[in-house]
Image 1 (cartoon, one colour):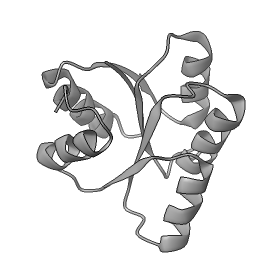
Image 2 (cartoon, one colour):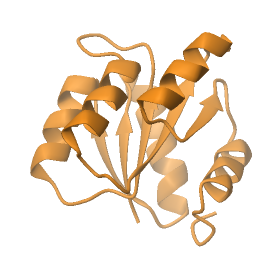
Image 3 (cartoon, rainbow, N blue to C red):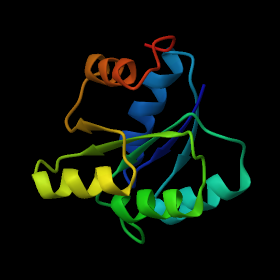
Length: 124
């Protein structure tokens, strides 16, 4: 399984990468939505993208909308990682193509549970 981690926080990227690696997931990182789109345009398919919402250059919502509009990774699942709890935000993210949400702060257990919900039973 391959995952793309998109977050402007190097700490969060490292935290996610370490937890996913323990589950046998190969990870690639991007610092924002712009960089993530560049990665998706040039690399093999990914099974999962975990994207922060609030990032410079291109935020997570714009990133998800763009990747779906461009048809990048049509079967790829997208998990938004956020502190946003507003229903209008969640509705918009789902309309743009997000599949699931992981609320910050999160634990390795909550990450595993979300992976299971998204159909990645072999990883969790």
